[in-house]
Image 1 (spheres, helix red, strand yellow):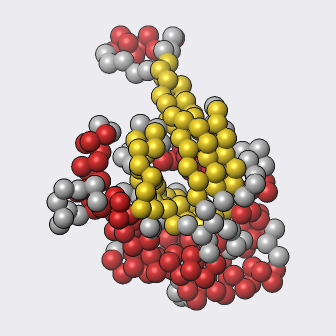
Image 2 (tube, rainbow, N blue to C red):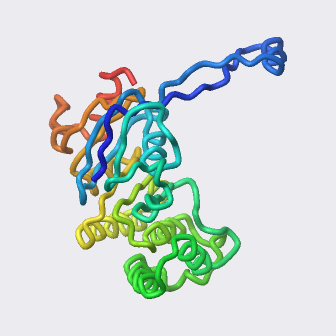
Image 3 (tube, rainbow, N blue to C red):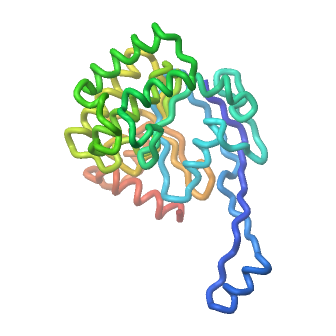
Length: 266
């Protein structure tokens, strides 16, 4: 279970003033401004839930995921995941989570995919029998047979994303964080990834937290929505509740979300 209570995080960012004189001045004396990335957010996610975590760019989605994965330490508030505090017990915590960032890779670019998998097995100290069992299952379900011996740099985006998902699951995590997992994929690859994630949840009761701007992914994969804007949780409810926010019955989910952004001025 993921339990977040009154979590806050503020960044200090160098202020950039316009003009050549101000640019020269900033070389010697920097001015900083505070940006509230997370503003006292609270929510609970139960084991096996599939949750869509949505909001515009800069809303606080990435900061939340970094705190939940133990990369970032908050300024205040509490967070426990399966009884652990992520940033204090990170070594044990990372064994229970898998993370996929659509625009970043955890695979080594110039070596065959299978070599990256072997390195990840060593990093997580996955027992040989578990690794082999998981590898065979993931290769079959994600159709990786023809590409595991290919260097990552030679893969298409869709092929690489399937390998990224496999890499995140080799150590059998209980929780999977997905950040734009289908970005840039063609329709066939998107459907394959969605089907796999649904099957993973149904078979292993894996908790899935999905952050994306693709509302088709949200509709296909999640039943609960967390809407964040300006560092605050603005809505926590079911997908049907989100759809009910529109006055137009035939409005698409993209239109409904855009309407909410305007309503909350985010």
